Image (cartoon, rainbow, N blue to C red; front, side, top):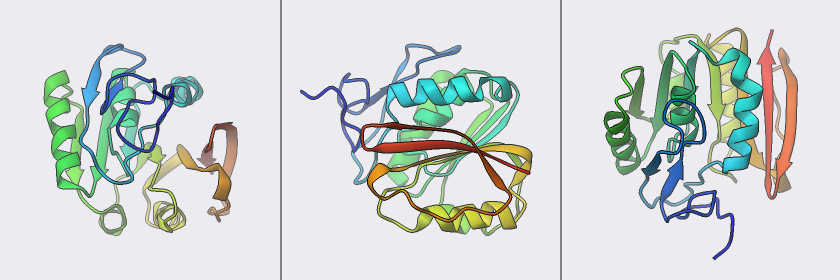
Length: 198
C-alpha cells in the first residue's frame, strides 16, 4: 500500500479506502466516506494542514465556496474550523448526494451542497465570498475559465482568498490581473497556491 494516493480511492493520509479525515477544528478526527468517481482526488492531509494554517486568520465567520468539492475535504475542513457559511458544488449526482449525507451526519447547518456544473453556476447571479477553493480535475481548461468568471462577475469580496491546486507538471495558467500571490508550495505532483484579490 502506498502512503499517498490522491487520484481516487484511498484517503490522502493512507487510511481506509474512500475516506477522508477532518484534521482540525470541532470535528477533528472524523472520517467521511466518498464514492468512486473518475478524477476525484482528495487534497492530501499535509496540503490541507498547510493551507488551513495559511487561512486561519481569515477563516472564523468566513463565507466559503468549494467549486469542485469531490470528497468535500476542503469544505468540511473549513466548516469544522469555524467558517460562517460553506457552499460546495459538484456536478456528479452520487458525489453531491454523499456530501449531503455527510453534512447531515455532522449537523453542519452552515453548510450546503449543490449538484451543479461550476461554470454554469458561476454564470448566474453572484454572491460574494471570502474564501474560494479551486481544485478542478487536472488536464482540463476549467481553472482559467473559473478564475475569469469569479473575477468578472462579482463573486469575490475585496481581499478574498483564492486557493488553487494544480498538477505540478503542467501548472501554467493565466490569472486575473488584480490577483496577488500570497503563498505557494509543492507536495509531490501537486502545486498549491493562495492568492488574494485587490
